Length: 101
Image 1: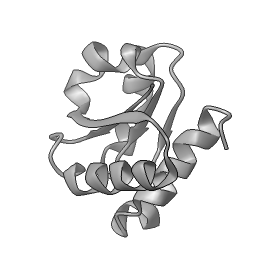
Image 2 (image 1 turned 180 degrees about the horizontal axis):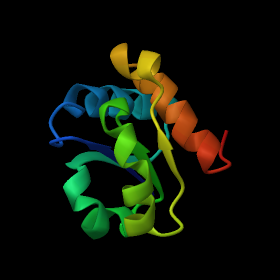
Image 3 (image 1 turned 90 degrees about the vertical axis):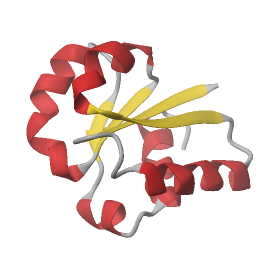
């Protein structure tokens, strides 16, 4: 099962997006776990993830998160995709990053 981790300032602003990604994954029959955390938890949860996606509001912390998660694929969610709470779009990005698209 693919472990997708979203990170934002407090771990709460992405909760709607997490629900939308889960719904998109269920619709596609794609087995994954999707959870949101604060960037402060990057060192703890990041290395266990298959892919880490940062909310655009914490894009300035990308270098720090990269150091804390090691070789885990990481990207910043595009502002428009995030603003629309586009679960299908974020799931597609995660799958692309993992070579599954």
